[in-house]
Amino acid sequence: MEKPDEKIGIVLEGGGMRGVYTAGVLDFLQSENFFADGVIGVSAGAVQAVNYVSSQPKRGFRVIANYANDKRYMSFRSLLFSGDLFNKKFCYEVIPNALDPFDYDAFAESPIKCFATVTNVLTGEAEHLELRDLREDMDKLRASGSLPLVSRLVSIDGVPHLDGGIADSIPYEAFHRMGYGMCIVVLTRAKGYRKNPNKLMPLIRWKYRRYPRFVEACANRYIEYNRTLEKLESAEASGEVFVIRPERTVEVARLERNGDKLRALYEEGFDEARSRFEDLKRFVGK
Image (tube, rainbow, N blue to C red; front, side):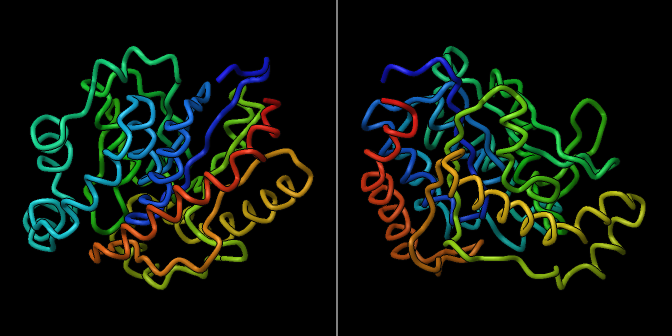
């Protein structure tokens, strides 16, 4: 697809297993040879982003569908003995290197810039880290999806980081500032969704008591998330951004294991992107 002068960026919200919706959207775009100049993902969105950049359609869905019920992938036993609900070695070494190989070379050689949003635990602020070669940058990707309470801190250059969604769940404004003036935002919740205060804040305050700014970011997350959605919906209405989101309330949980639900949500993402594709082409001027 020939692109206009203004850089096109794709912004991918997280949402755990709801990331299969994002996988469906990206797979349709790849089927139409629609490739942006850059993509930024948060948590599960970052995981889907790398498959888009490496041009491996269906891999993002396949990994979740094939391993959601595999205790090597995710289990409370892993959480108990390693501190990570999602097993680090299995998820970030065994799967991409052996079971469902990730194309590291295609990723590194792609002209598409790829970024993962993480939260700096010391400052409580978002950082948007470029992923150049996943053989070296896998910890940045892992940090983006390391949920508080069920993940160990991930050290990047000696600084602890966790899930990017804490500080910036939908980083479309940051991507604008980074030079991507034409943003396509993929959400994993239906229009009208708003977050509520985190009921686990007492536990978060205790576990991360050494990191007061991170605790504050966790406490304020629902406020910032809802504020971002309000601004995004306003920008969408004025034609400044293009948003793809589920049409109906999503019944897939963050840690969903039901294969039928996962496939249905993947297909919904694929179909929604297809139904909106002509509008999308008009948005980018093609």
